[in-house]
Image 1 (tube, rainbow, N blue to C red):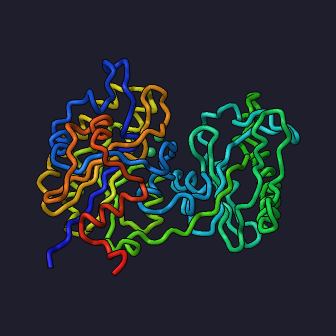
Image 2 (tube, rainbow, N blue to C red):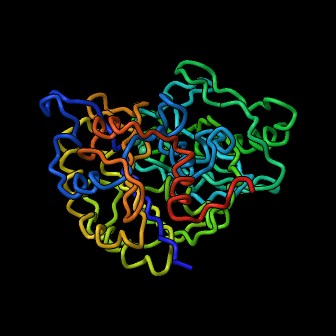
Image 3 (spheres, rainbow, N blue to C red):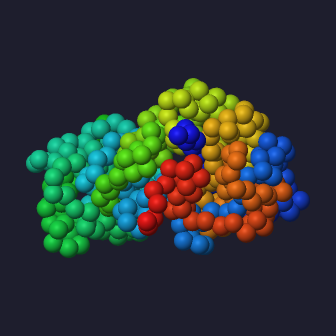
Length: 406
Ligand code: ZN
Ligand code: ZN
């Protein structure tokens, strides 16, 4: 039997965009000099991909779930777990995770939900209020400014818990109440925890210092968006593949870990626009004898668009184009899929619900060429799929799929 082709899935985060006045009415992809992408587009299966349902604007968490074949409607349980993954926290199925803010409390009134958008790193506060309460472990980790996440680890926990964040300054802090009877134990544990954490935060040198300088204290951890960490089927088992990943951003890295992919470490992978593009591509090629599925996330495209910088996004696309040149040499044995997880507009700086260009590139496959790799050219081919079908196509093209029927 022929050896089946390996699969490389390259997700350029926030890939697609909209026409920009700064680029003479073109999108960053259209205006970029991309000889490699454009040559591939003329011999590949090109089209667009709707990360979730048509026209739905996705976050990177839901779109990656979908593209990897995990239906967000079934597995997405709220932002808490993904926020925790994003801070590099370990989470296990059944754990409960919250998004959190350090806020300022005066008696029981929240006077500032962001503790004056505190700039000093709050890690020492977070470790001081990470503790055991009865039989469960509570861990808090800090993000940038006032942001944090809280994970509860243990048995019989529930995410049916109300926010403690009043969502408006000037309102009283709210107790974490059960939203249904399953949340009673979790609510009791959290209330106990919050009493202890307030005592610690009140007397913490970090806050004593702020108090002495008359600055808003970070004396209340406000919780919201409780979610239970979902049990995701192991990706390698689900598709009978030996999967690995090259990813710089913690949230997506955490997701890849959760589904059991192995990490390929590449020097200089930053999750930003200065990342090591060539190193990523070299590592793909070097590791294809070990793994038959490699997931790559390049965050730089999304970063440039969030910065509302279409010229930077164009530059990033040109850098990626240069880097992918060696991939054309492995297409006899590999299927390379180029796409994004969602589109990000470099005009508004926000994700959009536009479909994302997608290209399946490999030798000897059915093709639907596009004149170039861009939003409009890919739409014109008429080929359109859902995020949840990307892996189906990959499995089918590489002749791995089991027959549906007799
Ligand atoms: Zn994204
Ligand atoms: Zn984004």
